[in-house]
Length: 375
Ligand SMILES: Cc1cc2nc3c(=O)[nH]c(=O)nc-3n(C[C@H](O)[C@H](O)[C@H](O)COP(=O)(O)OP(=O)(O)OC[C@H]3O[C@@H](n4cnc5c(N)ncnc54)[C@H](O)[C@@H]3O)c2cc1C
Image 1 (cartoon, rainbow, N blue to C red):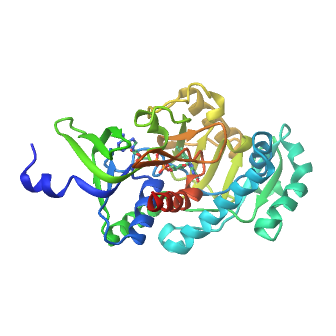
Image 2: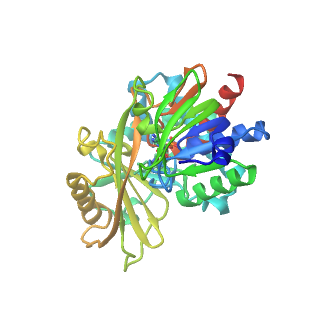
Image 3: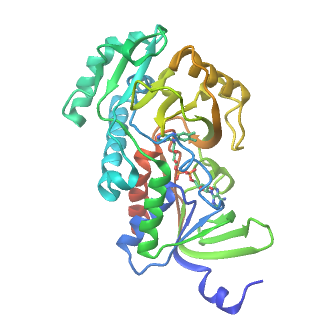
């Protein structure tokens, strides 16, 4: 039951953004900067964002050598280069807007471990470097001279360094977005699940998570930024959810002989050092079908694969004690390019960021805000 004042003041806005992950908040911020007087409301079902933005690994990455080579099978050369450029520019933009300290950004480079099966990628490294020179003005990939010094198992034959990658703390990135949204006067309401949108009229039907209160918001414009959960609001959207698992070890009682962000198995597996612990995640490719899910559950098959990699390949012969595990949900489609589309007279959507939303979320929000401005 709402009061006269609540009904009068809280349910109307110029822009309503559904979803408060990287894309939702970035959209709200870019729009509000351009329209300081607009009432911008963000509706989020979780207490915190509850999708991928605060569940991810914090890789500030744009594609390892084998991922980029793989992309050439599914996309044109121009599409691949355009996506790499967008991701890299996205990283530069968030660093410029929030600052490395606020993001805990560290430029520790990226590395890809190649086993016997993937080693042939090295033969194409120079060609890929040549193509990427247009963007980076320098070679991106190079072979690590003494890979054995990093202590991985001898299954790892070659390590490729990417000197433009880094790492950040996703919680601090989210904090920076919250702070900016608050300064600009954006209202974020949490614990509210949207269950229906009338795209042409700007009506949003929602309920509080307790299920006790139903409500209707009316907006001049709506932005759907619900990524993997979009089908509920826009059933025709072309996307498939993809769950990702992360394991975090207890603090390790030995020195880790490397730093930076590490990719394996064509980018499906990733690991880095966090506060003296091993953060290890991915391996969705070990059960693609099982991981096409929006449920935050741990797949035991994937967990045991990751645990095995930790004690056999990353720290051979060492027993790793695990402290935490969690999952997040991403969205994928036929191509790796995000889906940004008008879905009604008053509604746009920007979703399907795949596994690299740290890099492109901010710029996708800028693009969506621009489209909403013109609508
Ligand atoms: C395990 C894992 C590791 C990853 N690692 C990396 C990495 O290292 N580097 C990288 O660049 N990317 C990584 N990613 C991908 C990256 O996190 C995502 O691409 C990015 O966070 C997507 O942002 P988003 O705002 O589109 O979606 P989300 O963060 O999922 O935000 C969508 C929001 O919408 C809300 N929502 C959904 N439905 C409703 C509804 N009906 N009503 C109200 N609210 C709703 C959700 O609660 C959620 O908060 C990883 C992802 C996962 C899962």
